[in-house]
Amino acid sequence: MQNLALTYTGNVAILTMKNGENRHNPLFAKEMLSALDTIEQNESCKALVLTSNDEKCFSLGIDTDWLMPAMKTGRTEEIKQFMHDMDEVFKTLLLYPLPVIAAINGHAFGNGAILACACDFRFMRSDKGFFCFPEVDLSIPFLPGMIEFVKKAMPYHRFNEMKLSGRRVSGKELEQDHVVEKAYDSQESLQEGALNYAKTFDKKRGIFGEHKKRLHKHIIDTIDNENKPLIEALSLMA
Figure 1 (cartoon, rainbow, N blue to C red):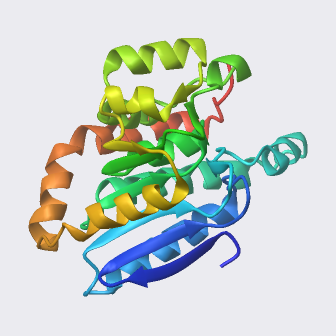
Figure 2 (figure 1 turned 90 degrees about the vertical axis):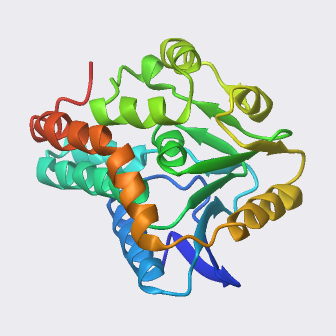
Figure 3 (figure 1 turned 60 degrees about the horizontal axis):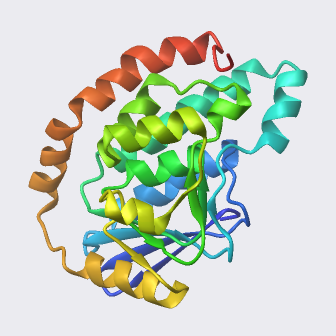
């Protein structure tokens, strides 16, 4: 895969984003869905860690080098399909019958931060990387489903401040708000901590998935009923 590498440590799958800033484009979405399907088919797998091998970035969100030319040349169906595919990525993570742990090794901005919020648990660096929603400075309103993903992962007061200010927030701040389970002071300790946490899980997939399906039903309903019309209308800018 061009954007991802899949490895296993014991019964834990490690899905590593490997394309620098790890921007989201049609190929990224398709590879994510394929990788998640492959992992789920591995019946011995007990947990998934999602991370990046870049020194600075976990994921900086949507690939503007793809999106801007696509918008200028009127490739509306391609853009809409990408948005639907990314919603499918987020929904798949949200309902995944295995625990999904994000090891946020660097910057997580915009759609990259949403990706982390879609995971069940988050770990982050305390010495490097920021969590940020820059949409307010880019005139891009959140899709309704995105709002629900973030509300699942962080307290309302923190999301409200980040959403309206666009401020970059550190791992230490997010640890205080319990957005991340723990913030580590090195890449090595982050990866070790996330992996060790993943290894504590050995749950039956049926009940694990059913818990998540019932817990997150309102998020899925929002994506299906509110995101789709906005995407179809390409109502993505303010």
